[in-house]
Amino acid sequence: MRAAARSPAAAVPQVPSYASLALFDTFPAMVWRSDVDGLCDYFNEAWLRFRGRSIAQEMGTGWSEGVHEDDLSTCLQDYMDAVQGRRTFALEYRLRRWDGQYRWILDLGQPANLPDGRFAGYIGCCYDITEQKEAGLTGRPLPKEI
Image (cartoon, rainbow, N blue to C red; front, side, top):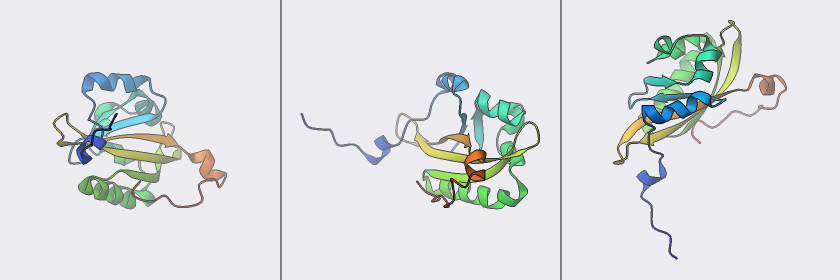
């Protein structure tokens, strides 16, 4: 049996609908979604618990209010560069947790398409890597594009 050729658009996942995003509310990692301009329009329960803020506060660019001031400029620039280039990305930055403590975050983003192949924004997930950073296990910088 011969494998069917796939178009580049087929390699990019389709953007989840709001109904299917409910699945991510039970996911242990922090999950987010953005529109074509990079403005976030969804955060799962793990994200909201970590931040201790409402979804209304995090929407759009509200989430960036929690990024450490020393990381903010680079974080936003690298994020927007990826959005404009529609590239996958991996970012490390400090994000303020509900208790005011800054934690190191690994943020992975993937472009997503609508069923017709048009770019729809991003779906991403974040992991708290503070213990790994403190143990020196993440010593080399991540590439901006993965």
